[in-house]
Picture 1: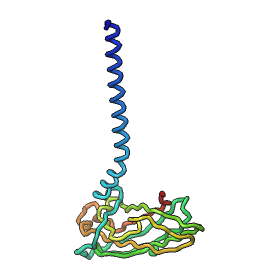
Picture 2: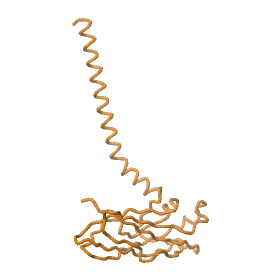
Picture 3: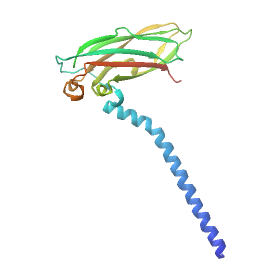
Picture 4: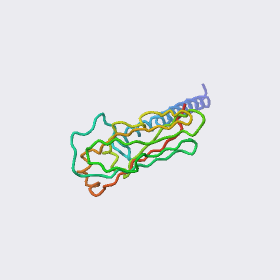
Length: 184
């Protein structure tokens, strides 16, 4: 092999290594992009970041005298022909006390439609203390053509809310839902 051929062969090896490295790098980036959403959702569920609520199996054993007013908000995506609203606009609840409220939804379409709700709590720092025991948002909701349903939300505010210095003067929490058409 001549000196020129040897140099050309080394260049081909270097180019092949670079191509393999770039392919692995792209595969890694694609994998990280797919993992980002579930990892972010898990982070939000654990920390309450961004107003994400917590999920509880049962209510609290501790009920405090301090009360918080919880207001309810409802929204529907433009491409979902539903009416969606809270039955009550707000409730006053003792911290630690379980509360059951309802949202009302009507499908105005002449066909069955599945919807899925996303939610948040504001102020966002209250999300770590807002615990849902039962919620329509845990599963997709199927509303038949022209059907109206009441959908329950059972929740409580964790007693640790009362010891958070950032929430010392926060006595109003808003629970907000937005319904979107569910993906098939």
